Length: 246
Image 1 (tube, rainbow, N blue to C red):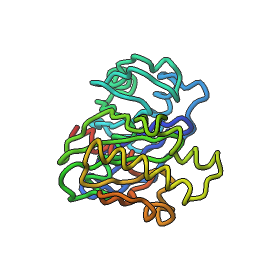
Image 2 (cartoon, rainbow, N blue to C red; image 1 turned 180 degrees about the vertical axis):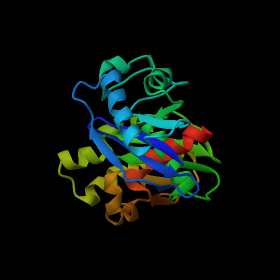
Image 3 (cartoon, rainbow, N blue to C red; image 1 turned 90 degrees about the vertical axis):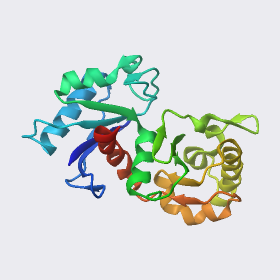
Image 4 (cartoon, rainbow, N blue to C red; image 1 turned 180 degrees about the horizontal axis):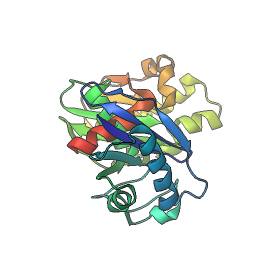
């Protein structure tokens, strides 16, 4: 049993995770991300979640995701939280504040780990590429169970433009694109990824993946492409796994 925490721009979520099954072993708790989302304020929210989930635990290892790259526990840049996170040695800071060992990782990487070990890609060998289609496009690349951290394949250039500026789910909503119209843009994006990485499997996450029947069959790829299975649980599950195995 371990705890995974997912820090997002609007909410901080956490749950106890049974690492034998990848299932939540508690309710999923969510507390709004503080408006002033400094490391200190976010750490206080995480501490509240941990106390509720495991009030008497003394030997927890906690996995925590952030919406940013994480290089050996340090956060070199941040966009969706307070700039106090910039260049912070986040794993050490949070360990000191929470009193537990911390494994810190990028949120898309955590989702990829969750899908590979417990979700849609479980048991699939080779190169797995997870993309999360949301406000932007997040990515995770895992080769035979080994994570290549901090990929930013939402920002590859496709037809002379940053990919997520044309193909994210957020863009689809803002431009009121039909699924067939959006699928044409996704097709160009995934074909470019395919030529770059030659993966064995694409896994598509993000809230829009629940409507995968409306756009995935419209893509023309050599690589199999399937919807994520864990949905909004993936980041928490992957973080809890990484806390023990990462």
